[in-house]
Image (cartoon, rainbow, N blue to C red; front, side, top):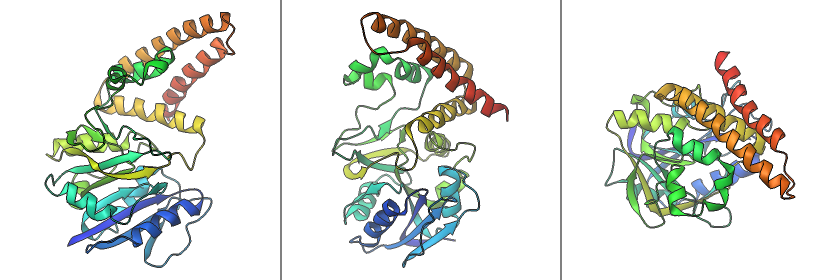
Length: 304
């Protein structure tokens, strides 16, 4: 059961408590007439989230990943609007009202703000549904130096219309901050808990699109997203590869994606070989084995 004109905020917690506490304090300090319910989901964190005034804490018995944590929190949601929010973000005191106002003309929809990196650089918060070609281009390390060009951003799936100040429908918005009707989230079945980290928000937004709930990028509203605060880069890359292959299996094209990434690894090996001959400190064979190992690891996870 939900009540009207309120907002339920679900914040998954894992790792150090300080970033989550800071985000919660900013949520509790919002200038808004809305009733804001804050739910923190402790996903079996090694550093438990402490009891905090004005916060409902859900403690999961086992670490299930982002989607599972949010699903547990949404069970407590009692308002018509839902905000899924990462713990490693910083928001201004008018963020809630600004985001709700930007979303109002589009509802029911999934609405995501502009995400800023820690140094204030805008990131690509609105994106196209992923294809094998997007991910193959991203895998090709020789193209990395050209990725500041608009054509390369589009080639890896960034919607280049989603720039600061723009408000446009997109295929999906990054899950660090998503505002949507609570009942729409529930009607879609919530997050697929088979994704541990990454791609779960894309999967959800595809299912919501099928229910007539689009995604909208609201570049008139922003927050700062540090990102990756609770895990090491190599672990994040394994999660990313595994989740993208699961997504391709669910929505089609897994074989094509695996073949494309393997071919891109061969191209990377040739390019790295040339760089090594030119005196660069690279290890072509070790890098290729590592990339292929990421694909094999994802296959092993699939078979379990």
